[in-house]
Length: 354
Image (cartoon, rainbow, N blue to C red; front, side):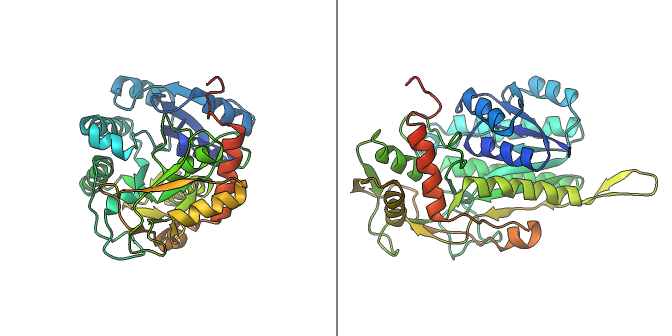
């Protein structure tokens, strides 16, 4: 068994898939989640998929005393930090909630990590930190700016991590900047289960396909893109999960032992890395691919552009390939097939009684 990892927000969409990838890679995991935007059923299903129960602790990252109890009971190599709110529209309506949860929660977590001398963190960041990109593809040196409080909360945490790395070179801090995670586990047992009306495109498309929603609204059809609709870098969630394992493996490789058996870790400081495919797909291209896979008609209507939305956004993923030995492997067709399998088996998500 490899090192023990604390996974905050591990019951959520990306967190649950990453738990499976971590288990497959031999890591021992403890999941910590307040279940505010996730279902305990996800953990039950992950346990079934990996064939053993997962150590799960219900708690909030803003609760220092709860975190201290966890850290005092386990010897962690590091933390993968997913715990955070993620709806752009909600963040505009409730900015204080987002700063309190995403920024204050991370500060509390970092303080407890420092107290217990756990200095390895992989942070769930976002391509939203790049705002409206000046050039494409976007690399890690691209200018950062934000168009909404959700993105700003991620960028604020990144600035905190940068300052922390400067202040103390024993920290190893890797923010993984995700582009657009979609798809589901190939078993169809776990997937994206948004509360209420989906905020993201793929679950919206799949809920229209399964008959739960009447039609898809496509925001903007006059962008300077291949067909006038927005272009994004969609990445399969299982590829994304493997990116976290690759980042952990990279941190482990920075650890060396001397003749007396004492281990020393070479500091990586603040090391941001993009996780994307490097290819852009338009909204209409995604709708067409999903319709082909599901054999369902996807009715849609065009609506006005949303404030803060941008025309095109896709990654340069060279750093992840060169540094971590990781690259996305699954196609848009794979993403649509796995999403459709999850949605058709679980039309109401994890709540089978809806």
